[in-house]
Image 1 (cartoon, rainbow, N blue to C red):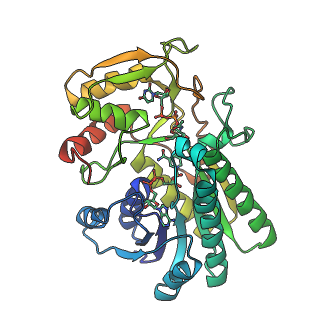
Image 2 (image 1 turned 60 degrees about the vertical axis):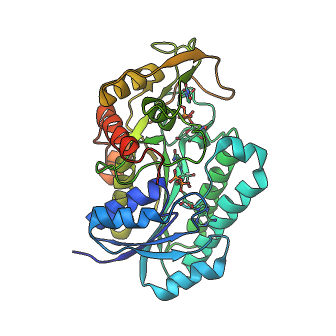
Length: 338
Ligand code: NAD
Ligand code: UD1
């Protein structure tokens, strides 16, 4: 089995930590590079507990080029998964410069260090948010870019920088994966999403209401042109997202080239459907009320996952009940997060 080392920037974060588990399962050695600005060092122990493997950690900042280069000097790196960055849409509107600095400059540093080190494979965390106005469902890779906030712009810019870089250096093999709505947790309940403060997104909010940490869920809007009037999204299990990264890595290592791929299930789930699924998983009823629409929300969007299947042989395996069961296990085992 391969022992290739994979640099995982942001590997202590929500998706990165699950990707480290998937990498270990596939026989790779993750080397985590993280500054813990939005994560806990405890994640490393948890990943080691799950995988029964020692995980290498380099504490550092993607804004510091020398620190990234040091990882390449210390470790023989075969490929990179670049998760490090900031992801809160509202915060990006309040403080766009920080978002452009960390997400765009940070990514340029990682790409630059990669080129200086002779590593030629990288997978970037992008988001369905780059597509902005989402009217033509399912959303395929050929949908128009139209991000509606600075966070989405940072993802678009990095994708465009990557495409330019591949055009200028034929030996680079890069993939950008646009996640729809990653949710859930590892089935052991040892790692999961640990938002700071009050969660801004539906799934962690719902889990905290179910656990009694928050009193009631507000459902944003009841008059959308959808099956039950509430917003529809493509919720995808975080381990399915992690598996997609390993599939993309293996594709790039064997076939090479440039990939831009949407990572979703292809299934739209409404807010009310998610509440009911979570109630089944938790075995309790969840208090909720209708409230007004949230500014900037769209009614419905979900992925066209066919290119992912065609190119990577990957498709999401875990359904909404598994997502809610795993999320609930993480929530009750870690009521206050890490
Ligand atoms: P996260 O905040 O849990 O993880 C990001 C990790 O990066 C954290 O461990 C954080 O400490 C680290 N980090 C942040 N700034 C850093 C810096 N300057 N140097 C080094 N490390 C730094 O977020 P996540 O949900 O795991 O998201 C991972 C990536 O996926 C992000 O790029 C995010 O934009 C993207 N993404 C996430 C979602 C989602 O719903 N979670 C959806 C689409 C795309
Ligand atoms: C959010 C991000 C988006 C990111 C995506 C991936 C925002 C504005 N957008 O989008 O950039 O790519 O997550 O995870 O943060 N809802 C409620 N009550 C709540 C919270 C949400 O009813 O308390 C509804 C929303 O109106 C929406 C659905 O739940 O219909 C999902 O919301 P959320 O989890 O925030 O995800 P997105 O809006 O898709």
